[in-house]
Length: 300
Image (tube, rainbow, N blue to C red; front, side):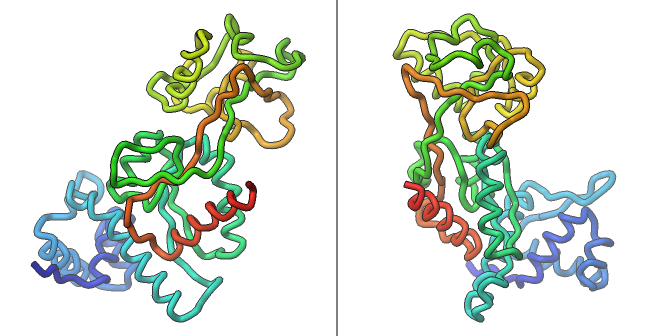
């Protein structure tokens, strides 16, 4: 079966979605609304299903349209990037990298990586899906993200996990907390403290409980949050101390928060890239992915 459509049909579809209506999309694309409607109808005929539906206030994607949208964005970005590659534009390359990243890596690690990348390729845009570990894996598997930065692999045989770095779990506390003045601390020292942690559904919580289950140490969390970065606000208020990955802690010296290593045992999580097996990345995403891997190789 042959599916016939033009790239401009995809661009029209995405513009209507992004701007929420035909009128603004037609103005942005410098075409009449009837011409824009014909573009959408042509794409719907090629796909064989409606892609857009009107709600009370705006135009939204149907179920099929929502599935098509991320694939259409990638197709346009890959096409644009490939043309620039062939013409040797180099550092003037444009395009978009769509990636799924666990929030703790998105907070400090990812911005530093993007800053270094944008120094060479300032015109490349980023679309970051800050998702939990399981949601990130699903996003990559469905093709919504070109690749992911995650803290675990997957049982899905179509996904490949490439380790980047080991991220140790550390203690975060206020600088006036008694434990801040202690020397070396162990996990056993945290028993009985007012601890702040993430919910049991979190991948970080699972890693901790699995590792501590072998030692007999049981931690009781007085406060549970959905994202580890939220716990730092509670720590600042003096409500407790938090166990979290080092990547989720503020870099450099913080005016209120102190981080301390925890031993006996040393517990780490592996941060790495999650990709679809045999998938072809857009030129922009491939360059960013290679920079992450090469940067870690140099660090080692």
